[in-house]
Length: 321
Image (cartoon, rainbow, N blue to C red; front, side):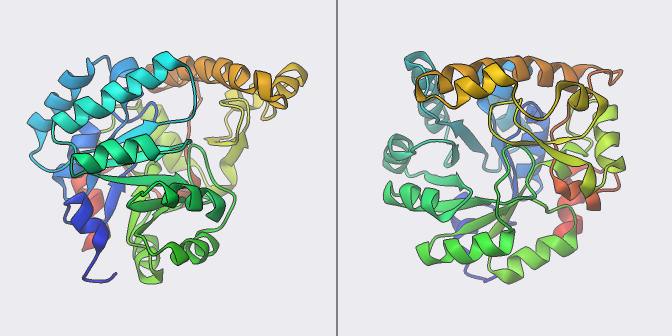
């Protein structure tokens, strides 16, 4: 890692580690702990409000009471209803008013986020899975790229981290490795290859501050890379999950009606919304259900190297020491 790391300057943090935004696992205590330990925790607004029950501004205030270090925020900006877009605008404006200066955008064109963020002296990094999406984001003026590879949890990419880095270097922006990082060795490998930072989700679910139930955390520890599968029945596009009996019972592919709707531009958004709403409820239950009966758990291939539940500070210190 270069001593002149632009990511560290833009995020305002000590270590090049992002606790990535997760639905439903980004509880306030986890987000704040990542920032307080020298990385940066990313607020996920839907998790904060729908899963963890906070009014948006009150949730940010609570996290800021837990740490005086910088917090970031995620916006899912895929084209949707007018009401949802207005809510995203409100989230962005409120976060900027509360001195959040680092944003990660996902799934859409971030032009309006970049404009408002830059006016307030904030920075925007955009999730990309390949060069063609990066080019569109760079054209809007983003400050960095989150390179989501084929080992990531959640909405995984299709390319290996090395291949993706090589493609994205041409844009001359800070690049963050997202996917597959679960131990210190892989963290240092990513930085030595030229990544400016890493983003981790699965490793931080298996932490003391994450309020996921113990069965979920133990499933991460017990799972291997081969246990991670891609399901298209969550949002209509591949999502990395642990291959549990619940996932097997639902199947990994959309049914005939779902496939038909997803293949038509007119109905695609409707079908994806239906699938997403169903999965939002199931994921919320899987997070909070203490018995672990609803074994619906998102995770990436970094499960291969995760073998313990530690405090967030201990996790980060093991990586950077």
